[in-house]
Length: 261
Image (cartoon, rainbow, N blue to C red):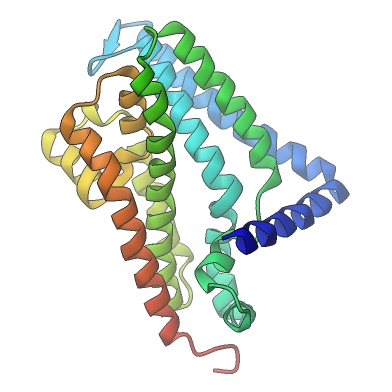
């Protein structure tokens, strides 16, 4: 574990060095995500002009949800997302060969090789939004404050798990840019509180395509709104999803034929 942390530190240093050569690109990437944050906040602000609650969520509680969503999204962008979108390129160009030859887990290299420095700036902004939401909402309990980081990390695990499953498909079918869009389509459901959906769709998003665990469950834990079922799902399912998706990804590598094929 210590070796992998040191290795990822080198990856981050290299990424930072690259970004310092193209500072304008760094700030443009940051600004684009700021616009995305503003659009999400503006959407709900318009809704709350016409109603005091949305599916049981007050304006303050929705601010906590959005802050949670932004934090998980920023962490995913900083750590995994850039690498996820590179997978078809790795397969088509044969760059994946070099990952398989290294004395490190190919899963680690494929999903953590290129950190996104701009998203660490977004993380600071996301934490600001989260802090603002918490200041508006009723004070959380000590248990909620202690449990929240765990559920936050588990929300991130759901993101990387689904990306790993799509990555496994990308290795098998080669030209997979269209398949990767599936992630964004399902992610749209995770960008809204799970309680706005029908009971059937809500269970699908919690247990089959776990986008409901990304932000909705961590936010409800912090707000003291999560029932036993949600707490259990948020604790048990993300590590299970990660184990299954990692196994599927490593199994898909057996069908990779290399650049010479």
